Amino acid sequence: MGAGSSLETRKRQLQYLEAMGIQAWDLRNSAIEPLAVEQNIAEVAGMDASPADIPGQSAVSGFDWETLRARVKVCTLCDLHTSRTQSVFGVGNRNADWLLIGEAPGRDEDQQGEPFVGRAGQLLNAMLQAIGLQREQIYIANILKCRPPGNRDPRPQEVVCCEPYLMRQIELIQPRLILALGRIAAQNLLNTETPIGQLRGRVHQFRDTGIPLIATYHPAYLLRSPVEKRKAWQDLQLAVETLQEQV
Ligand code: URA
Image 1 (cartoon, protein in one colour):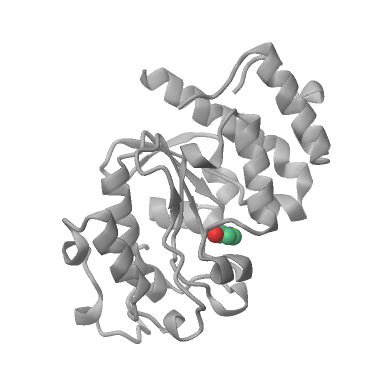
Image 2 (tube, protein in one colour):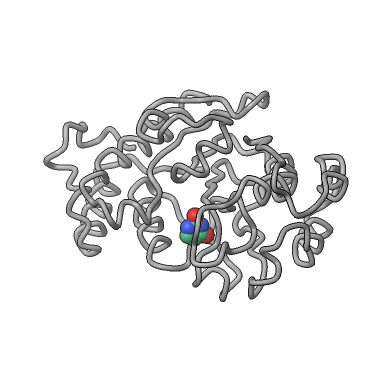
C-alpha cells in the first residue's frame, strides 16, 4: 500500500496537518528528516458467561467474512450486548497491508456502527493522511466489538469473549503490519501489562504469526496530550519503514 514519500506529497501532508491545526505534528521542527516519511487469557474470574459459553478460536475458525459479521451482529456472550446500539464489526479493505486495532467503540461508533468515526477518528484520519494512506486502504477494528458503558475500560472477560472474532479477522486479512492504537489494544495484543510508553517506538511480533506489530498512542489520548503527537508520528514512520523493509 502506498505511503507517499515525494516532496509534493510531503508538502500536501504539511498543508493538511496545518489545516487540521495539528501543531505538534510540526515536522519542520522535529528531529525527523524532512523526507524520511514516512491477558489476555485474562482471568476468566468474574465472568458472567461460563467458560463453556465462550467461543474459543475454533468456534469461529473457518468462518468467512459474512458468517463472521452475522455472528458478531447477534453476539450476546458478554453483558455489553444489553447496552449497545449495535456491534461494531470493523471496516476497510479486507486485503489491507495495514490493520489498525483500537480499544472499543465509543458513543459515535456505537451509533454509526463503524470504528473511529468520532473526534479521535478524525485525528486518526489526519495521521493516516500524513503517511499517504486513506482509510479505504487499511482495515480498522477494535479489541471489543461493543461499547463499554460510559467508555470505561474493557473488562478482561469481555476481551476474552470478543478475541476470537478479532483473531479470525486477522486470519482473513493477513495484514503485513498491525498498528495497535493505545494501551488497551497494545497490552491485550501483546499479552503484557507493560505501559504503552514502553511498548511504543519498537517493532514487536504479533504472537506466533510473525506479523510485525507497532504500538502507538491512542488518538483520543493525543487529543488530550497533543505534546505526544510527535512520538506518534515517529511510530507511524517506524511502521512505514517496517513495511518497506519487508518488500
Ligand atoms: N476509540 C477506539 O478505540 N475505537 C473506536 O472505534 C473509537 C474510539
